[in-house]
Image (tube, rainbow, N blue to C red):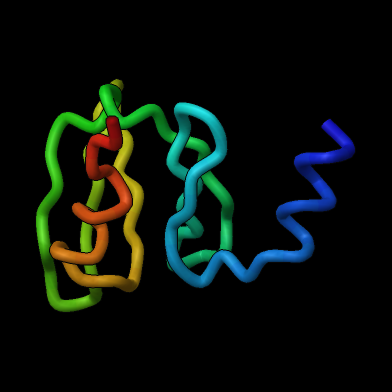
Length: 77
C-alpha cells in the first residue's frame, strides 16, 4: 500500500486516473473514490459536472463533464 500512497501523492488527481482495475475519482467534496467500472449503473451530466450512480443508490458528483468522465471508464485492451 505504501507504493500506492506514494504514487497518489505524486500525482494530482484533479481528474480521474486508473490503478489496476479501478478508476480513481475525486468528487466535488474532495473525497477520493476507487470505483470498478462495472459498478457504475449510470452517468448523468448536470450543471455542476457529472453524477455517477453506484450500487445502493449512492451518488458521486465530479466537476468534470460527461465526455471526460466517460474517457476515464474507457475499456482498454
